[in-house]
Length: 225
Image (cartoon, rainbow, N blue to C red; front, side, top):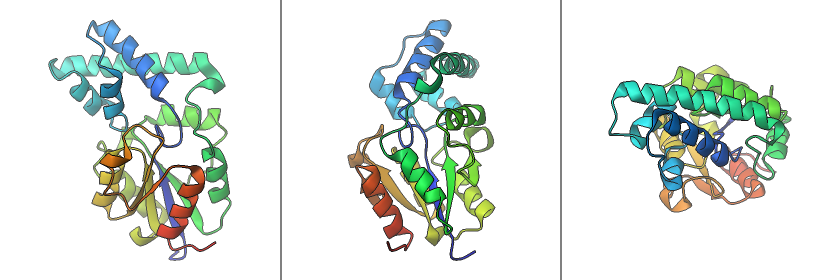
């Protein structure tokens, strides 16, 4: 399997623009617990982390029991809003659906997801956008420590049998890039997500469009077109 390559995608801020939905669910959760809603920038900072870790950062003054209540309230609100929005929920960024489908059609390319979303939330998003079945490895917050721990990437490598030198992690936050470094794989920071590129200068490459991303994937995994 040494000729195979593995392309690993983050989801929120990389494949899909979920900021509006995340903020709306946070607003409902914090209102239910009667806490002050963090700012838009504060919420952007925690996207990519697992919810339990995110709530600790967003509400450091409350006890662990309240963090657990916030997580439960957020999940319930997010699911309600997702069902109400239908296909309009968490739209994909320009060019990303076509890129995923193109990569999935290549014999030498395997695809994976490494996300702070729950399995239920990820599967719903993939179904809405017609991307179910394109990914050979699915790594979600339910099964791993929060990013930037390398567990998600290491598991994806083990499941697919691809060597680290033939893998690349694509993300929009420093958590994604730190995770890739910890796992010993290359990384691409995208410029359309939730952390500025200036915070991800330790990535192997950057991309501002889906076309630039495709070229960077080929370059870092040793493919020529």
